[in-house]
Length: 189
Image (cartoon, rainbow, N blue to C red):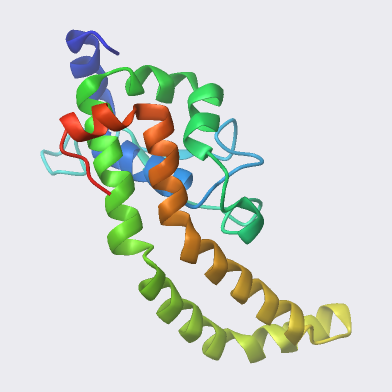
């Protein structure tokens, strides 16, 4: 994919924005275990209807992230390096300068704008307020105990992950891409 004609052909087959969003999100949340080797879902239309999403290009769907990631014990994981080593298609696209710049910018955007500490704290507070009791009742039904402490610990653990993850992501980008390369391409912390 470092050859421009190959990259352009790939962009005709896949929605590169969807691909970048998907990989940036998975890498940011420190997805591991059964990803990227498995647990991938893609879709496309079979006939081109002329619309943006009806263009027959492949698009990625984020799902089933409960088996790894979003955990304080994974905060320091260099999931970019892991993904580069484990996913040949991602590695090949990563060799393309245009893709790498777009990916790096999107990864940081996701950390600053979507998964920033404040947004995640607000979401987790709302989630805890809404779901704590229904989950306790479900646990009581199926496990014969409410497990509120476990629920609270899980919410706190996820919050700790997001408190520290952006700095870690920046550091592994510097390690994998190089500080000079990031600066040359206008990618700032």
